[in-house]
Length: 303
Image (cartoon, rainbow, N blue to C red; front, side, top):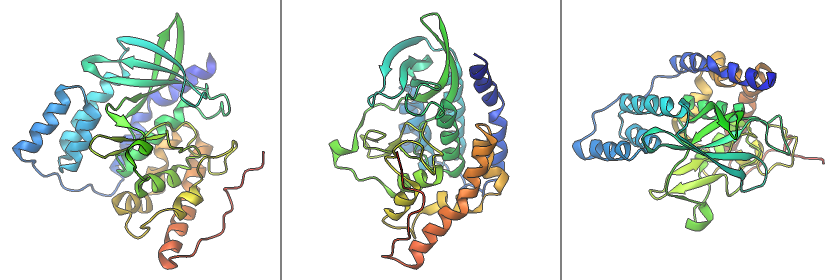
């Protein structure tokens, strides 16, 4: 029980770390007023309880202030005690124990019990939360909001992470979607070792949604990896056109970049920060020498 309380305590004040990191980030694009039709589309999503989708759309329309307001509302709902708790059992890969939660205003989430990954118990729910915060800090808008949460199920108190449930999604194989460069870059940055075909989804509008990140920050995987940061960079189709998230990643002061991961573990944060030079150099090498693949050092796995 001490470990679980420690997990909860680590994230009680983690919002302050993220706020400080965001304050040190490069200035965001200027907010512009959306037209009436655009505003109505966001309103419709909010009314239906699709708050994450509404925030994403508002950001795409240039209304960052509204996106932030919607996200603040969503975070309050996700952190509140759920109205309904339904056990789902082991996830689709038979690895982690999950629940489906219903919150106020029709918002739902998937709750993953901390430490329930049978192959990597140290790959906890705190990594899920840190991944979302890195996503938000850099502006990828791939990962649904994920918060630390305590729930009561069958008279047992459980600690873990609650990830907002995005409705109307399908696996990429069903819609013929290829993994976008944004996900490949994101996975390289966070050291995600588990991005298989069921760990990202596609919405009806064609948006890529990245889920299941308890095995993030595994730059030298301790379990057999599905993905590795080196191969993800080598698979990026357009390394010279990675946009604002990559520029933020390169430009953020070290303390600001490390802040979301510092809430998980200081040693993990140090490794995350140390990897920046290697990730950037590999990308820049691909830009300088197109068609050439650098050697692989960290993707080997010896069982």
